Image (tube, rainbow, N blue to C red; front, side, top):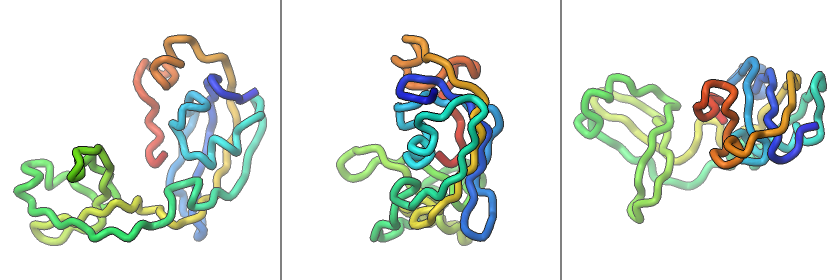
Length: 163
């Protein structure tokens, strides 16, 4: 049963209202209770067992939050160096704010030699539909609990693309 400190493996899809799949994964493993996936996904999976299916709506507050009032920041290509050409709309970038706190800014627009970044995730304010099938559940090892992620997938942090 999926509870805190269990490694759960799921097949999942996340949709927006128009049916567009915004993320999906097959045999995706995560450590439950470590906030490695969206809060709404984690809540929907509590108490589920291998073979169980889940289909729920996740409100924005349990997904990517409501949009925040934030004056977008505009950066010139010279601020990014050679990586400017690899920027894509929706991409999250690590940034230090004026207090040196790490935050993620998202590319909202690329126009000519400028990229506009915002604090709002592209899915902020949206209700998501979550579908999942539980493929397996096991106890996490002490090493996994200490690191905060499962090690069975090659020892690296989970790679849920939007979560």
